[in-house]
Length: 471
Image (cartoon, rainbow, N blue to C red; front, side, top):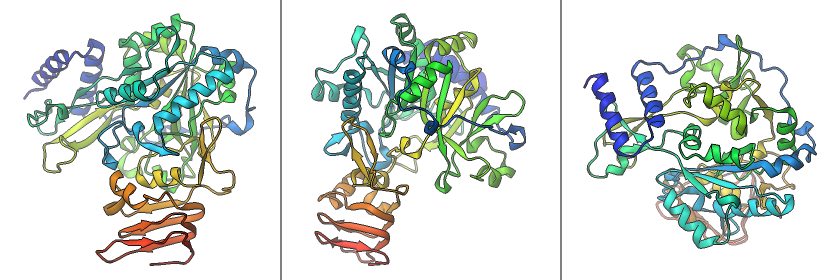
C-alpha cells in the first residue's frame, strides 16, 4: 500500500468513527513522521544547563495570591488507563487503593474537601478514554450521586481514539475477532485536542476559569497545593511542570532538559536519545530531574498557544510497538503513535519547572506500588491525601513481588487477603515464590522471602520478619 493510499484509508476510517478533522490531521502528521523515521532525536550536545529552578520547599504552604486564583481553578485528572498490566478490565481508578476506597473515591473526597475549605467551585474534569468512560460514569452515579460541577460543566470528557497501525503495511490494522482492539488512545497529549474539540477550553475561559491543575488519576500524591497555585498566579507562569529527582530506577525514563539555543525547557525521552549516547542519557547526576506529570496550566496562555499553531502543537512522537491483542503475543504486530502531555512545555515562552519532593509522585503502576500504598508506609489524612507516613524517615522501600503469583490483581488480593503487612521499618522486600500473608505481619530491614516449592507457603498471623531472614 502506498503512503497516499494509507493516508486515505486512515482518513476514511477515522472520519467514519466520528473523529474531528483536527484530530485526523494531528494523527496523519504523526504517521508521516513515523514513516519518515522522524522521531525527534535530541543529542545531549544540543542541551544546556538547566540553571536554578524554583523549589517547593522554598514556597509558602499558602500564598495570598492563591486566595483569588483558587476560585478560578479547575482540576483535571487523566483517567484513561485500564490497568491491564495488573489484569484489570476496567478503569484503574476503580480499583481499591486503601481503606476500602477506590482511587476515584479518594479524588472525589479530595475535591469535596477543597471546595468546602476554600469556598471555591473547583470543577473536577476526568479525561476518560473510550475504554474507561462508561465504567467511570457508572461509578460516579452509583457511589457519588450528589457530586457535580457548577455552571453545567460535565464531570468528564473523552480523549479521542486513533487506529493501531500494522507494522508491515503501515495501514490501520484489521482484527475482526474484536474490532475494538483496532483502536487505541493517542497518548495523554490528546488533552490539548480534546479540550478544543469538546469546546471545554472555551467554556472554561468564558466562565472565568484561568488555571488548570492536571495530574494522573493513579497518582495519589498529586493534591492541589495552594502554595504552588499562588506561585503560578503571582509569577504569571503560562505552564509549570512539577519535577523531582531521578533515581536509579528512573534512569531509563525521560528527563527534563533545556535547549541550548532557544533556552526553552523540554522533555527528552529515551527514544529521542541517539544510540551512542545511551549511557550519558542514563546519568542521573547529569540529567537529574524527571516529569511527575503534575502540570499547572494557564488556560489563557494555552488558548493563545493553540491559536498560534492552529490547534496542532508540535510535540515529539512516541512509537509504542505492541501486538493488536495485548494478551496474544502471536497476534499482528502494530504500532501505537502517541505524544506526551508534558512535552508541551517546549511550546510556551516562559514555561518553568518546580522541583518537588518525591512524595508528590506516588503512582500505582504495579502491584508492587499497590502493596506500598495499602501498607502503613502511607496514611490517608483528613484532607483525603495519601501521603508518606510521617514516622517514615526514608524513601519508600524497594518492593519486588514475584510476577508469577502477584502481578495479577486477583492473585495479589488472594495472597494479602488479611491485609498488607507493616512496612514502616522495611528497607526492601523481595518475594520469590508463592507466599500468602496472615494478619498483622511486620517486616523490617532488608527481607528476601523464598518459596522454591510448588505449594503455597503462609506467613503466620502476627509474624515479625526482619533482616536477614530468608525462607
